[in-house]
Length: 203
Image 1 (cartoon, helix red, strand yellow):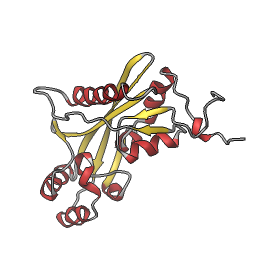
Image 2 (cartoon, rainbow, N blue to C red):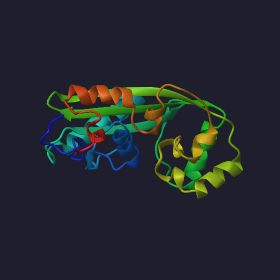
Image 3 (cartoon, rainbow, N blue to C red):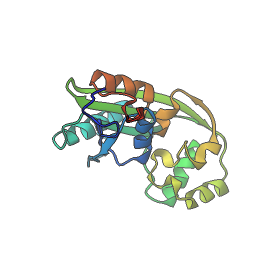
């Protein structure tokens, strides 16, 4: 650990306003400065879900590079079912349609991570399978009233109240929340970003 840097000083720029991603990075001792990137999230014609999330993650990281001296992390998550990418719901009806589609079925959650640093832009994409129990129409309506689905891909948050809908998960839980920690740590280490740096006690 660089003794010239305080344990609480940022070692990474997070190109996202997501409090979940910031919290996940904090859980492995990575202190960040938050610098959201404004990137057009419209899928390209014929673009696969994996290519889509990885393209956005890389674009978000690259968009913030010129504004900071720190390595930059960008990430994007998509919920996919029947080949359709489910983004963030635009209103209550849209959220209800999404959750009804997910109800009683398995779907994929794809999360891409890109880290821009001394070695250029390194990225990866992680796929997790999530099985939902059957969700009633009343539950869907009640869940919307909590406000939780508003800014969540697929209209639900696995780390929040929607945990009661999840019957089974195969893969990375943290990836569904917003950042696959195992793969993220590998990318950060390759770019020279110290892990656990925020966990040391100052003398």
